[in-house]
Length: 530
Image (cartoon, rainbow, N blue to C red; front, top):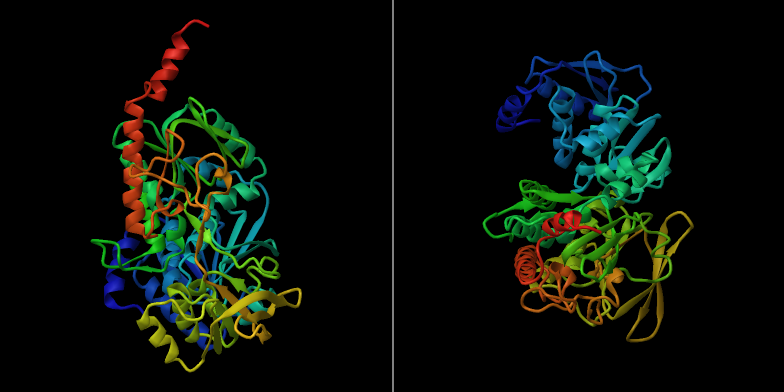
């Protein structure tokens, strides 16, 4: 299963293993077990520190296997064959079980090690999902560090009966101690904070104690990362506050138009962005969500956690989120048949009838991808014609299991209380209502800027975009903005990075024309008599 090039790379990686590793495979006579054992045997042969054992009489899922440090108490299981994007999760699990350090801050590591209680995580994934490995690897780290944490990755396509019985309609979907815990992307810090009852209060107190920044970047996407790097290189006190680092890039599959990088993947680029920022003295605070911007001599950014940060200047780079249809049933059935990432969730709808809402490039690309998985795709477009590139439309129309409906307005997502069973749409030409029986709805109608918290503070367009000038300056002096959240006409990664650099240079120019740096001002205030 592994080619010679991969084996050579793995051999070099496995040289870093310092502790013996035990793999216990739970198998039966099925083909899945045979294929899984074949892969595990090849892996075990690459290092004398990896031993492989079979078990046929246990009550574990089959095929599945547990990775543990020899003589240790570690519960880290893969149910199915972790190939595709999840192969990296397996390699990291082996390395970390073998003593290779985990990638997490000292504070998060300490927090995980001190978790009290039993935590049984089950994470349903699809092997084509770009964001699933991040979630799997985060929970695996917890299992490596704390024996009270049990981590199980489950390939939903391999265990379809479980997917059906537990109503898993999106990936990644996490169950904790048998109960639904989360669906979609979530970071290690977010998971730990959710199960650590005192985390929010402790984090808020720590943030409140921070000195004012010279530049505070709100948002951790390409624009925010670029702004932070440019600010830090000026030698001024720089902070980044973000709910997640990477922004929409984390939800992007293949990237082939990032200049000088012929091909990469969104999660990989997001990791590189964060590592680049961390190579400078930048204070990254996550997962935190900005709730209010208060103007003043020192700007205040109030967070949803209750904490408050101060800064002499602010760069807003909060990006955008998936635009919703805002029709009855959409919110009710989100992650229960209503989805926004066809690449991630598509495999869960194998053999089913789904709809794609939107006839732009994103919608048509989604319909093409889904057509290779599901039994039938119905694409619904509000306009009288598709708006996607001609080459995409040609490919779509060549597929035999696709129906295209234009001049149609989706009016309702229909379900049975547990999952989607259909949708209703209005024929805008005849004013007739129609019903379609289906099991999934993929919404692909563009993005909406994350500016709800800024209304009345900075000038926005009717669409909610922040209005900026050529330097990234907003209507509020000292507050700048960059990336997809602004009026910049083309929402592209490379453009967002350039806009981030522009906003950062604009903020620095603003600072050198105003008062002394925040740290110097604080020191002066501390020495002056009351």
